[in-house]
Image (cartoon, rainbow, N blue to C red):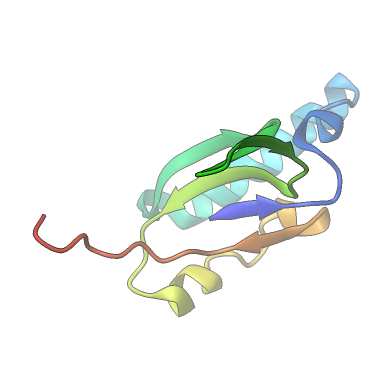
Length: 103
């Protein structure tokens, strides 16, 4: 899952200690609700760069964090987003991983 928002993760973390603790509690409550399906809580994301055959360029991105979730399918993963605290500040993009042929 990629978390997207118009406000950077760094800016979102500029809050009082009480606000930060309340936000972390909301995340921990959500994580507890999905249980073992949450493989990796992830981390906030900072700046980004794009690398292409033509070189590298720093770019603005709305991606502000990620988590790794295990679910049967996209519908099951989407159902686990109910009550997710990030939905108060942005959107969640759920991406399915695919098996690499021959591996």
